[in-house]
Picture 1 (cartoon, rainbow, N blue to C red):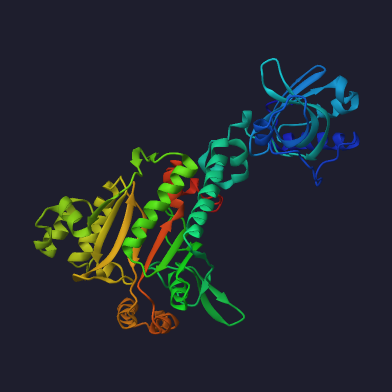
Picture 2 (picture 1 turned 45 degrees about the vertical axis):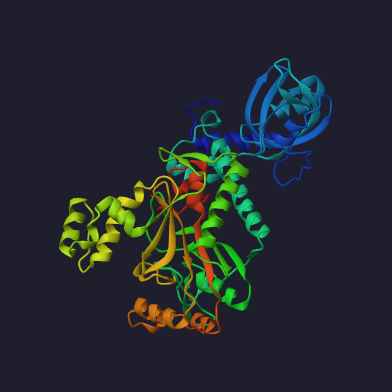
Length: 480
């Protein structure tokens, strides 16, 4: 076919080829094929002379006279096949030459080594399993446009082996995290994704209407309040690998639908969670990636423990001066302006300070750092520090300038929890989760809790610069 053919003409030619294949006894679509093994397994257990069945997508082909070579890919590896006219017969060979790049076939034949030492299946028979009606990108590695890659993830996975590898690693990481927690006696649980009260975090929810009860509901922004109910009920170690939904912005590290891991351990605290995340992340890194040093967003990050710990106020003083907390609100605002940090009208000194921290300090924390002893106003679900009621016993884990995990010594005083809910609700009683408060009234043991942004952790471990690179189907603007 001419390179000038349009996409529609290519498709039409492939349909003609499909019809000719069907007439030759090679109909497409819908056939099961029992293979000997995946292609990576055939490489690993290669035994010359062994008869095998293999299948996959044709990703490269060379046709020459009475012989043809092709590369099959099944997502695990690529494997060469050799087709000879004198072995498979005239009709089968003629039909084979009608195949196009992208077609999915099954083959049976003998494993051989070519003169160049390449593992190859010399096929005795083949069948068409699925016809590709649209051409793959040029030379099978031409899909480079970022927007197209995200929108057509199927084609992205076919065309870019490194993308396939990222998502295989994602599966392995999630599996290993589950295994780690299971081995520590945690129960994996599921909590509602449709909730009548959007609680457990400060975020704007997605809303929906439940027709059967004629009520408005929210897609959950966090599972926290349900998981704590289970702690009250006696499930002393629980976790959920959950999908959260927040009706907020899109950027390199935010997607409105994302994966988070929430963990709660009764009779523990923030320190319990510190040990847990250091052990878990280093275990996963060594098990899946065989290393503790990673390149991410232009930085070399070491996960070697112990990780740095610094109190919030000490970090502020390191960056803004030892006398920062002696300054006036006007002086703080002036500093924010000098640092090009936007300040909303009505912000108090603590809010201005945190805005400066959020915009200018957090991003400088490249190596793993636990920020502890935060102002109580920032974390309404955490216990106070025993020595200072103005602070809460929490940490925020920052790696590569991004928050990876917050953890708390959870607030288990129902009277104090109601007070904080009321302050947060600002007079709107419908925003207070009375069922959760009732559960706390029965008594919740001291508990450590933590949330981990799985997508951001995967960005770090795979060296991905954008969250859309570790989410198979990220949210995108509509076409056009």
